[in-house]
Length: 360
Image 1 (spheres, helix red, strand yellow):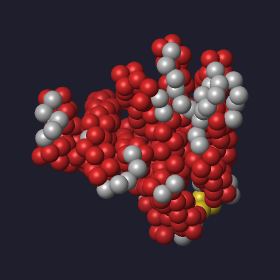
Image 2 (image 1 turned 90 degrees about the vertical axis):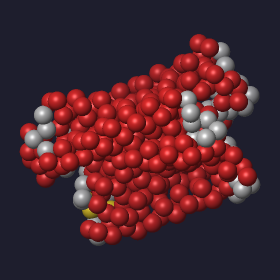
Image 3 (image 1 turned 90 degrees about the horizontal axis):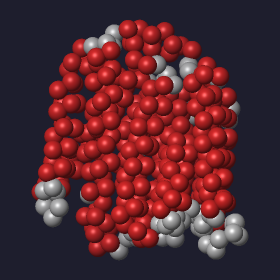
């Protein structure tokens, strides 16, 4: 509780200050305020990590990681849908591009850094291979239905689904994600928890009151919301800077996705540094599944009722990079033991993804 009181003031006041700045309407065409907003964005990320740790300690694993992953995904979905509804066809591929960038950053960046940092500090770390199998099987199926198959179906020309195919895709994603959450929280919860952490979680849970839990939940959502809103607001000046340097516009999506995923990334890497790699993998793989399994079906439903096209299928280069990433993660984690070499390989995959985005 001493740590909570120590950081209580800034972890609640800074997100509120950022909200006031964002909703004041003064950010547009004001470079100084945009710089201030960028600084507040980073601090709000730290606030989100702080509150997510309190919630995780109070409710226990794997519920804490699920709350953080789903919270970020829901807010991301809301932003994507609102932009697609107001932006028209120029945002037809926005959902696909954002989700693809998020998955690549999660698999190669967050998992890679967690394995590398944890491996450098502890040489070898262990985790449940059963949890990884459940996560990867769910992820592979959802990825195939949402971002690979649309590029090869013949019902509609181009990377699109027909209306019937959209409905099947929504059903498949909901069924798989529901089964995954059921396994993670009920039927096979023991796969996602490290035995030696159970007593520690119980002791920490007893020191956090219900009031602290409610406050942290509220400010976790506020912090995540303002991080996403500021990231989207700063995307236009960021895009102008990138274009001025002759870089591709798609790089903006990667940077925005990286900012949105900062809370999860910091939490996952921190867990790996504390020899809790299972928590890191729960965060990274669970977030990847939630990002695709919730975002794409929601966007598909909205497109179905509002009758506007949504680009779902990836190009061949992106499919190859995605398959390499999933295959590398699968081989790295399937044995239940990790080391820093696996992390290096995944980080090289991440560099290759960014490099080929800039130089396709």
